[in-house]
Image 1 (cartoon, one colour):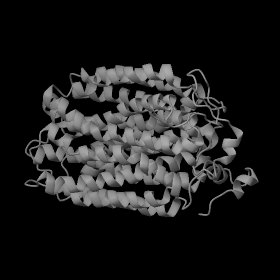
Image 2: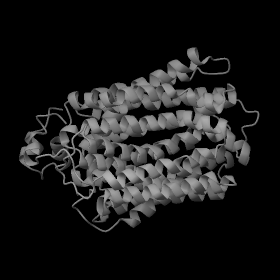
Image 3: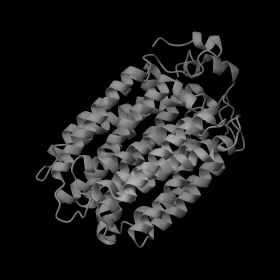
Length: 512
């Protein structure tokens, strides 16, 4: 948010340097970036969302070890990832709604505790089926804490500092995603893949303690009944579709695949119809009247599809076909961590100053260039000459994209729907990764049976080319839908409530 556009909010609310955990912060949020309270809030939210994002990537590098230990085929490995992404993506919006209604800090802490229990179940799993079930529970718990983490920041920080805080959150949370394969690889090689899950417990404990002591409680002033029907149809619909997409390539048009796929499509259609009719919808469809909100979520979908496919297939390819250890495969992605840690906050500040359109247009194209470079990685490729250039370009594209994208999404919703807005965006990202992992291996011609004796090189190359085309389309989407001028809360509200808002808000729009 630019300083001139934030003047109205600044005059309405005299900010304080600190708040106590018991305060309920109003839409005129008060926490200033750089204060002790700000650092504690960012620490708690990054730790909380970080463990959820970490488990979205850290498992990738452990997949070969899991396959050996539990005798899992490729479909079993896909389900190990997608069961987590499925419940996370399907329930994120519900988690955001519960946080808006009952208190974002409260739901955040409940999610953390559930995540810790589910992580211990994953670490102790004796079979692939047990691991998949425990991962589904872990994803459901993550759905409570992920939207709350970002909504807490958006509702607590002063509007002038919100962009910087979101940039810091995006960068540090992105670092947890990128560092996952490195940390997981070390744990797998040094001890066991099971420690990948057990390590979550102390991190969650630290996040809970900080949240209870330092994070202010926030909630939406709008109250209504929880949309359980919407949650059920969305979850069931996604489950049916994903089951058909994963099992279909291996089993063909078997009865259970066809029935689950059909029921899934019907469930998703029922979800859309229900959300148009209920008074307190889990997904308020009016949010999508904002071209920026819809466009930013479309960019999220294509970029995170490419990200999900890459993190799944690259570490598998490096270990299976190039002979990397788990630690070596994980460490190969470490430059992404360095880039995001160093530059994401600056990327968020740049988007706040010049608007998110330019970085969101350029970023996905840079991601696509990185994937084109990675498509050439095969047996005999060196790390410095083959893998590293693609990883660096890929990481630079993510750094340009993630923080401006998050800022653009949240600026397009009103304060009362921050939890739902961030949850929708997070759900889109997780569902995109979920569908990419489910669909791309089959689309690229990668066998879904046992990995023994298989060469993934040709399939990996095709998959990276497809992912590059998908990611590159995000640049065109951003150019067409994101505002050229700096995004402000006033602009977002004017777009969202066209024809019924304050005329002064409509007059304050930046040129688009």
